[in-house]
Image (tube, rainbow, N blue to C red; front, side, top):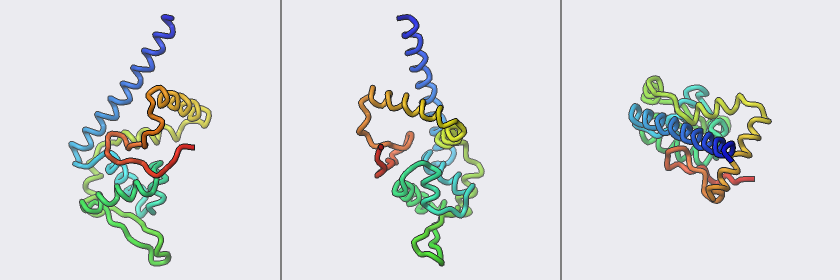
Length: 164
């Protein structure tokens, strides 16, 4: 039983470390920029991909386009981004940073969600499947299967995406 206790202890400590890093990064981002982690993550990706289609931004953030639209609404009302409709295809909307957005992102700290995605994308499919399976178990242990996936330390909810 001692070996099992040691593994449980290690898992709990790893979870604590993950939450600690995410919490610290989010506090630092909010303190330095005044915006949420997901908003800052979106701005960083927009800078990297600009001009970027809303659907492509959603894909890079691994969230539903409707969730990205909510984030962009807040960023646009704060003057950090501007959306422009394509002249060729009016259904296509591209997002760019404003001068205010560029200034904000240049001095902004890293975002935990961005670090997590970059790190995960580097892993093999086999490792990703193992992590996914283990996290499925944790979700079941916590009885959280029916909770909508909320963005990390943010009120943003990733809907209407459905679990397979």
